[in-house]
Image (spheres, rainbow, N blue to C red):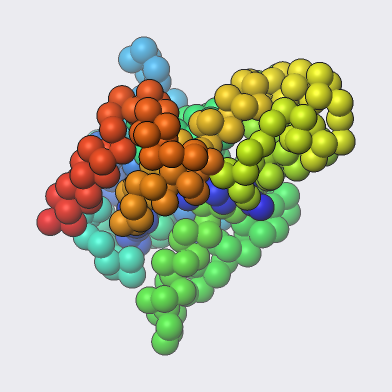
Length: 319
């Protein structure tokens, strides 16, 4: 069971949105803070990403080249521009109000061309999975140095599809954009040591003992898992497994199991009309009452109220 894929899926609250931006110098694009995670891919040319610093310090420009990919975990306000000192040619966030995945917008003057794919992934920031909340605010990956061949291939496929817009592009491009998020995080986790050597989710997903236990919990959250049965999956004694899991993941095994069960339940409530008894059974609770009590303790409201609020928010977003 792919823990990374499931963790991201549990946080998705809608469809990805992206636009193609073609800027000719002088140009600038000012984007306000967003509730979604953001991303930018430089398809052609070069530009600068300008982010405000925590605490109101001066912004530090980040130079981006063709093939570079940037992921912004919590959607901070920022500027993209042909020059870090530009004061002209700014476009605003109105370009991101469209749901046209293949739409393109031309901004700026008549100078050097920079072409970007800009967009956002709607992820639940109220209760993020710890795998995502441990990520840095900004992930900057270069695909021109040979370190991330799969990410490079994904960027090249996107570039080809957006440049040519051949038959089938409307089905291919959305899938590539969704896959891009997994490629970004895979590439980042491959080179990120975590909070300390051997700890954090980057380490947990690769650890030969912890990874099988996490995969088992994700594959079947309804199973009556115990520390002993999870330790058997890990090939360790009960005490050794419990100690290692807590040290690497940051919480005890059964605490994480409860977290994952509640995360799974919330997703089922948001995305399906399954009866509460069925949701309870699929998340390891023998009765609807026990499930409702556990869910309210985690989310602060009963499952039925959570489902109604989620559906209302979905309708409002689609209006």
